[in-house]
Length: 112
Image 1 (cartoon, rainbow, N blue to C red):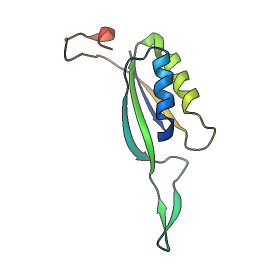
Image 2 (image 1 turned 90 degrees about the vertical axis):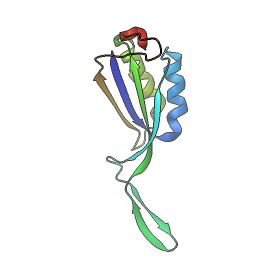
Image 3 (image 1 turned 135 degrees about the horizontal axis):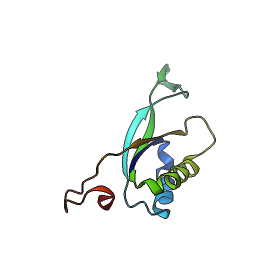
């Protein structure tokens, strides 16, 4: 099992959710976050004063998937989140040792 964490532009969240749903991913966790990478933020003008906005709004998605769905999930996220512009985000794939469904006590892939 793997945990896929993706940081994407917020307006792409619905597209990514649909892409993951189409390949059979049953659930995701989405969080509103702020951050920056090479994009480095931008400057804005507010009441005549210029200030730097370092942290930009992003959406963080976490998805636990079985090993056989990892490549499809990464491809789905990549295609649906891509705008071709700087700041599209990143995807991190990490090993997931154990999953437990609290309600039923199921473990492993059955809990996904």
